[in-house]
Image (cartoon, rainbow, N blue to C red):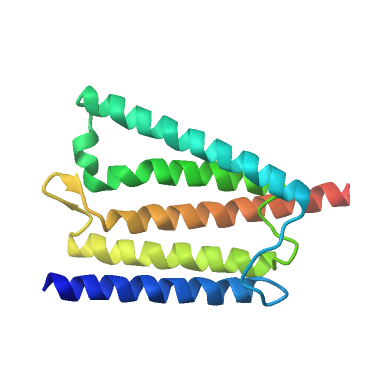
Length: 175
């Protein structure tokens, strides 16, 4: 049984990688799977990754302290490992978006926003199904299926931030 699950997991990862390449080709105006950035954007992205890294470190320290004080971390279960990743990703992406380093030179932002919203919506739908089945919270702790809710939240936050940034840019251009 575990061999079958392992094979399904590997096939799922391979399908995910293929899907990412296809989505990136659809998002980029030139049909390439790699997004292109200028030198300024690369420097800003480096700074954004630094902020994301430090945010993840701080989140790990907070969880470690909470665990040491035995304050509520047992309810997180294995999903607690994802919280620093989520926090670091939000910090990195937010900094990149609001410093004009998220959108590449060849990115079609309208398509990217739609894809982010769709991925978020799909993850929310999976979360609702898991909630109805009672698979989000069992035995006093959050289950790994809770990660779909966090991923949905992440992608919706990114889509909303991109829309806000687009509105800010239009407002600055109009004034």
